[in-house]
Amino acid sequence: MKKTLFTAACCLICVSSFGQQKLVNTVKKELKDSNPNFGELRTQIQGTLTDPETANSAEAWFVAGDLENKLFDKERVKEMLGQKPDEAVMYTALDASTAPFLKADELDQLPDEKGKVKSKYRKDIKGILKANRPYYINAGSYFYEKENYVKAYENFKFFGDIPSLAMFVGDKDAKFEPLATDTNSVKVRYYAGVAASLIPDRDKAIAIYDEIKDYGFNEVEIYKQLASEYVQKKDSANFEKTLQAGVDKFSQESYFLLNLINIKLNNEQTDEAIDYLNKAIELDPTNAQLPDALGVVYEKKNDIPQAIASIEKALAIAPDNAEILSHLGRLYYNRGVEKRAATADISDNKKYEEAMKDVKADFKTAIPYFEKAYALNNQDSDAILALHNIYYALKDNANYDKWDKIYSEQ
Image 1 (cartoon, rainbow, N blue to C red):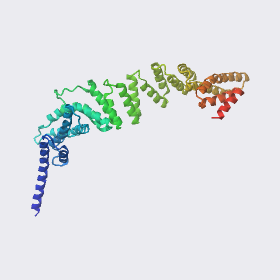
Image 2: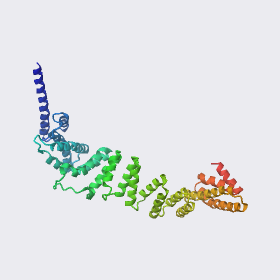
Image 3: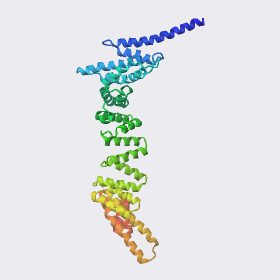
Image 4: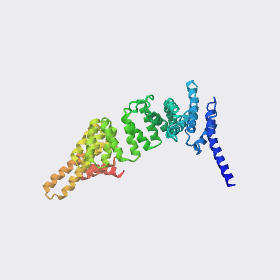
């Protein structure tokens, strides 16, 4: 009884194995028909790819890829004849052919029991991929327009990956131009990076941008994108490293310099920030924000004369900038306040009076800057408070009453 059951089990396994291989042969044969039922055949061949008996069959995987390729070809022929293809079918099929063909080639290169590799499908797969390669750009564009950024990334990227596939290594007949010298391929690679950014997949985007950043295509933008990806990833070290590389490579591009300045300021690396700001001013001498920012840095270092000189340069560029006017007024006002505090230790009346003259001089110098700032922006609370306090300190009752009223009405 046990022997009978064992024999029956063996027969069942053999039939199952034979059935899967027969199914591969059936699909292979029906694909040669003029109008095969691709949907039905796809369902049949997909089953063979997961069955233990044919899952490692190079033939099964090749047939799966060939099915998708023939469906792609069917739509491509329409396009060649001036007819409108079904792009969804066309590019979905092209995309679906990729993985089975690569798996088939992998299995096709395995040695047999004698240790020999007898390739049956590599030549055909190479021919198909070479012929289809330009269409991966179209597929990437199609999926990008449909906002399927994962598939857009995969197809744009695969266009560039084809020349480096193992099957093409050492193939002198392939005649692929190296990526570094092929502007079109670099451009498509860039599109893969953009799609990865939109997924968003930071690591994939960074890998693409880092690969092509020095290949001569859109380099400034690629360095900016790379920096942006590091920001999104919260990788401050590589963000700063990319900015520094951008400063070194694109000396006329302010983006990298200004962001690097912000980093130095946030890290309180004031000396380095000053150096970079001076470089930025050389690049963009009409940008009033740069000497104004330099003045603020000097102020943080308590180098008030340098701060005043820098902000005066900013004001010369933008004389009606309320913020810069307020900055300059604040410098004189704050210096006056500090000088006044120091008079508390002066016991000699004459020296005290001389010191207070110096205090009042700074306060009076600050007045026109604050008043113009207020005239340009009557919401400038710093200017209002400063003028209120200055006129009080100067004992100018008429002007104090005016600004006390404005101050009270805020």
